[in-house]
Image 1 (cartoon, rainbow, N blue to C red):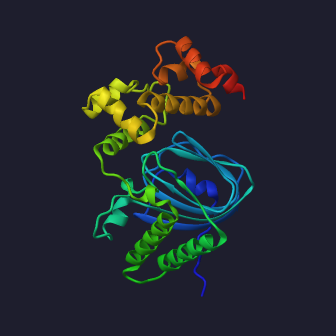
Image 2: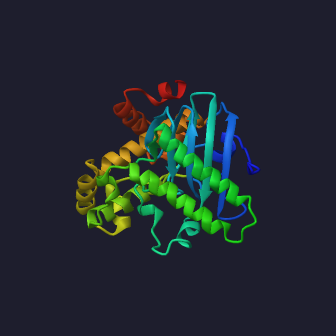
Image 3: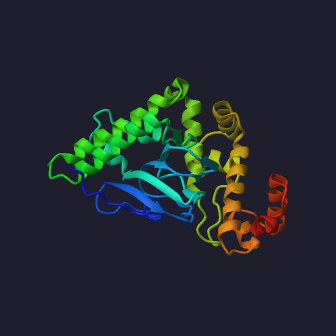
Length: 294
């Protein structure tokens, strides 16, 4: 017997910032959508299985998702979806880390998972066979949630873990075997701290950390040690990560708000709009005003 499936629009699932009515929910989606979702952090983890064409803006990445895929989002990382096709079908589930940990005796941290970690790749493209496997697990979650079984959330937690492990199985071995070196720990702390500065919600909210030195001081490490660790792990300097993240935020603010260029400059930590104009043009090849009109 088919479960009573709750079907919501794509926008509903992605626009929601807080997880209401418990630590878990799952939905099937079969709707048309035409509007982008807001670029914000949510207070939950989310796994999405879908068919359709969209662009995922996740931290400083812009990823075209043009074939069946699983995506994994982290509550520390802001993201938004920009529709390309008008049709999106699939499933999503939202849950807290406690929902998983209370059922996982090993207390595996989702923050350590290659699928959810900051700086990781949030998209796992699927073959038709892999899509069918993941779809079956989502359907089982929906059926179980609709049941009266007293331990149904233990069963659902197992299904969520199965999806996570199926996706990990698709990852290259080098990605799954995460190093526990001090360099990785420092880099992860830096990336997490960097993401916590964003998104900027108001022109009056200026970035508190602007330079590699600011981040090093906050992390209580020498700036040279931070730079060495970040470059060793990511191949890029600390300042490059900061610069790229500021540019990504600047583009979003120019495109999606009615703030003045001066307001955007101040909110991103520039003392003078002219400094911001020069910085933006050097990094993108266009002026902020031109980017705002695109």
